[in-house]
Image (cartoon, rainbow, N blue to C red; front, side, top):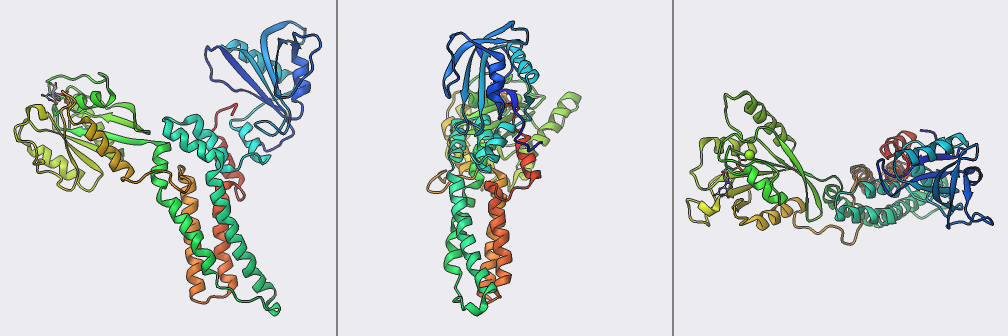
Length: 456
Ligand SMILES: Nc1nc2c(ncn2[C@@H]2O[C@H](COP(=O)(O)OP(=O)(O)O)[C@@H](O)[C@H]2O)c(=O)[nH]1
Ligand SMILES: [Mg+2]
């Protein structure tokens, strides 16, 4: 990725395909002159005014009309990138938008790299790194809750807390450095613990909600497993609220893993229905069973389905043994025809929650969803007083900062000299700076912005 801010860059900002409008965005110093080359306003006495839409035509070098457009100029620094930005609102559809882009490039713009617009917003100081990452999270959000979390991060809630923590550490560092540099000045030896402990507590608090936050952003893989014919596919259909999977009374109907997305109270979930696990001579089914095992391995949460209208089989016990110790909910299906009186859970995986349901009638499905939610969110509320960490990168940086602060605290308690403590505190400051971007390396920036789409 180039880091030069000299070029004027251009990219298609809207998704490809037929649509009402399609937008080409330009950013950089030459944006306005470029626009004046390409745009013929309909109003004779037209003048470019910032943040106002103008109607007219895109014309090529020969003055031929290419498209009827609306254009907006955002005068620097009041724009997405903090530079002069122009948006050309052309007709949707690939030809109109490509034409507008090609014309911009011939006029002297360079094609933007993925994420380069947002990178410029970052380099120009309009967004910090955590906010820039939130832009991508907003675009990619799969549920409203995930979107909400991303919008908070974009608004700077997390950045603010990280910056305050970092500033507190820097103040301690400044003091320690003074005691090292000017010992003769008699800077009073200060107990740094009262300054460090609140920072540590804040970071611990952020960390505590991180796993839930990351789930909101990345989603959860849930696998439905069990023996053939227990009602796994019926359960998938119930949870999805439509007939996605084929259900028959013939054991071995599902032979491949079926994956579908589901929004469970704001958590994006990929729900996988699997082939019933059993020994089989059928080659296709055997391959399906193999895939069931692979899906099971990757799952964050397992719904282990049992048929409560029949006695447990040895294979149920084998599968239960394989699931022990993992996050699993035992789903006791076919309650509408259950052989035993309801109340006693089936004697399998006693430490896991058991939920009686009927995939056929819908009985117990709400309770099952509630249980899934509880398992994932651990009963704790998201958000609260501190910002929600939604990004594994941020979580890791916070963990590092906590470790370094802990080391500094320990050192201070052992009475180590100030220059030892400053090493740990510097490392903690740098770790936090990686979140907001003060200490981001080019490699890190590349890794982050290359995941963006072109035009963002
Ligand atoms: N009575 C009753 N039958 C069910 C229930 N759930 C599934 N079935 C039936 O059990 C058979 C197998 O269902 P299916 O979903 O294909 O099971 P899978 O092999 O585990 O995917 C079908 O005949 C379903 O109609 C239930 O809750 N009650
Ligand atoms: Mg099935």
